[in-house]
Length: 201
Image 1 (tube, helix red, strand yellow):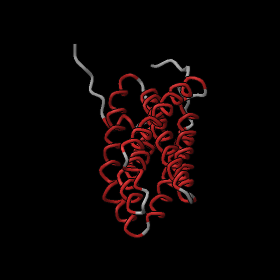
Image 2 (spheres, helix red, strand yellow):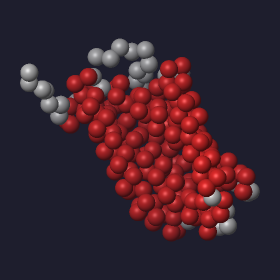
Image 3 (cartoon, one colour):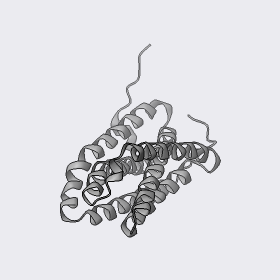
């Protein structure tokens, strides 16, 4: 039996053009923010005297904070919908960045990092639930593969491109991450598609 080949251009044809462009933008923005934060934040804070961020106990705590984020995302995508859950976690991630900017104590700094970790893993969870359902069966693998490529592109750009901003001002870099996550939330809102309880085609 011949296997049909889905072309990349089909992701941007007809009614799929808008949601494809927007969801791929979200993937790239989230990836830049995620890798930018967790590549640069620990070393910067350690240089400022917040050495606890490199301690094994705190790193375990940061990893553990991701679990409830992922669990809440799994609950949210079924209870509230894919898109609202994604938007919520993106805004929580932006809020974590803003909390860091106003943090005046080690406890507040630690709390902001935990909130970022919680929110960004929740955002990834919602993205993985939402993205494939945007596409019909014939294009689902192509859509997810392209989304994964956008995430890797963001991950490649983050350390070097963000480094240029960090060299000027680390606060500006954190503010940039907040802006990127807020833009990702706006892009997710603009998709104007909800796939919860919608039959796959």
